[in-house]
Amino acid sequence: MPDALPAAPPPLGDLRRPPAVGGGVYVAGDHRDTPSLQGALVSGGRAAAAVLADLGLG
Ligand SMILES: Cc1cc2nc3c(=O)[nH]c(=O)nc-3n(C[C@H](O)[C@H](O)[C@H](O)COP(=O)(O)OP(=O)(O)OC[C@H]3O[C@@H](n4cnc5c(N)ncnc54)[C@H](O)[C@@H]3O)c2cc1C
Image (cartoon, rainbow, N blue to C red):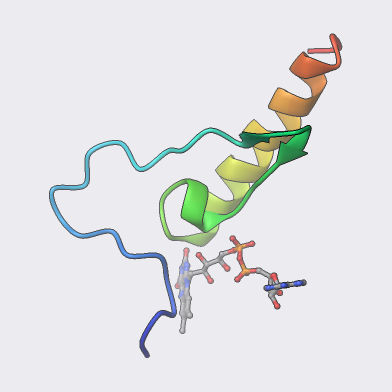
């Protein structure tokens, strides 16, 4: 199934990418973390934490 998941070829290294992409836009999903349900959930948590922190609520 081509392109079903974000590519994560070895060596993996740190796949985490920051949720804030500028202009007040925050991005979450498996493409910002490990390509899995776990990665998508962790990425969502990091995005929510970044929004709260940037609002001074974190
Ligand atoms: C066949 C298959 C089996 C898998 N099995 C497992 C497994 O066993 N365990 C595991 O941990 N992970 C598994 N995964 C991976 C897991 O499903 C994904 O990593 C996870 O669903 C990613 O979540 P996400 O929210 O980042 O993206 P997605 O779940 O892909 O959600 C993105 C959403 O955005 C929508 N969208 C896209 N473009 C636009 C647009 N322009 N405008 C509006 N909406 C848009 C899409 O329709 C989709 O609903 C599997 C994946 C596949 C394909």
